[in-house]
Amino acid sequence: MARGSRKRAELAAADLLTRVGATRPEHIDPVLSAKTLGIEVAFGQLAGATARICHNGRKARIRVSDQIVLAGRAAFSIAHELGHYLLGHTIASEHDERTWAHATCDRRPVHEEREADVFASTHTMPEAMVRAHCDLDTPNLYAARAVARLFPASPVASARRVIDLSPATCAVVYSETGRVRWIHYGRRFRARIFPGTRLHVATLARAHFDGVALEHEPRALPVASWIPRAIDAGTILEHAEVVPELGWGGVLSMLSMPPETSARAPG
Image (cartoon, rainbow, N blue to C red):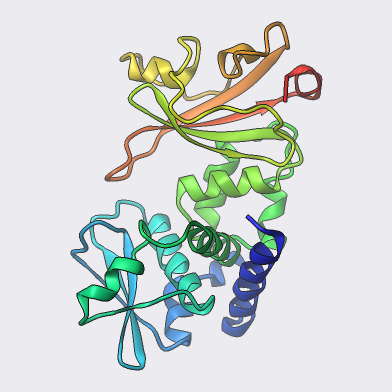
């Protein structure tokens, strides 16, 4: 994502926080942020999305699926839609189905979705408030869960935020049916893990898909279990959990490498 695009989204999110007077985590509420902008938020049936923004004349409305399990995911989804609104992305007309073809999240340009995600992450988990939870030598899901308890964000969004702000060599991986679905890298994680890769039998995530109860504690594994080219490069820490949301159900693995492993792992 281009630096200018990221900065634009971050500034818009910070400006909205200032506008609503949010100076502490408990002050952050995307529903109230929407109301400040004159945007209605309604919960109900919604096919194919967790949330969607549309307009009816001069007024905008965010529809939110009532099938969302976790309140933090609903809040983050609302903030994501606010990002589309404030960043000037295309907004569909509530009564013109033709406009939905270009304004649903699965059809928008990739850069717009990334901008909206950056906006939502910054608005729900401002760096100045959340950094203390991310400044860890070996980040894990305990940190992400603490963030999700304090801020209006989902476990997945919280884990990605920890990775973004951590000084460690770390990444978060989401897997389904024994294969990597996507990866979100921290700024120091040079090695690459590719979507579609079959999980190594030694990983905690693979054990889950093989029918073994998922371990609750982080475990040190040979780094080659996640990065095949890194033979004898040391260890990597995996902390894993199942994502308990409708439409998900896969395993989220937070990975972190100690400095000696990071120095030896191939880029």
